[in-house]
Image (cartoon, rainbow, N blue to C red; front, top):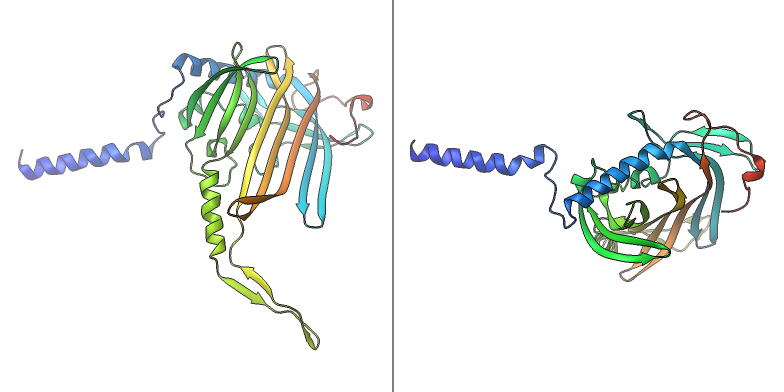
Length: 301
């Protein structure tokens, strides 16, 4: 083989080696969690998805929007059927809008929030998601009445819009014995550095001054920037409803803050979903029996 042929072959091998992972699913990043623990977590995630569709809960939703003049609150209530798997098929979440008197009004077949739903977060340690996360064991401690293991996780997806849990990072608490999820706290990847960079870009953005004419008078100029102040997001998810060998969610909370200075931010919105009155379902999937009006509260969550 000539020298030129050897060089060509070497360059081709280097190209194929470097381009390979970008053309297919990436190799699993190095983790500090033992493989047996990862396997147990994946099994428990699959177990939850199998058991969750057997239950129903009352879901109380409260969305708060903060303004300079005060806050705007919207509340609603649903009969909630957790999604999962059934006979090998994927079952989506189902929501049934409930009137104050307890009558079912409308059926909603999907989660409409901007960020991942509870059904997405319970797949944090699933076999399909593990190749897309880096995990680190932070040790065992007591949380309330539970002996839990704290696990740090970091997604391997570039941040796009935050709808995919693989665009998030944070910590999760899992039971030491049964591996059920107890709590998740998370934020979008590299949020602190990203917000700082976007705020710096906003502070240097081009300004436009607009004067509003009202008859013979000219109102004071209003200044606009050709950029928006960045937003930061935080997730809190808690599982405190034990049923059989799984734990059902009790609260899902997303908080959004707007950066107003390099070191300060103000609340912009809060979305809270609380779950109660959980029990076994007696009807077919997606066909929940009408609730007992006495068990469905119409007050604030």
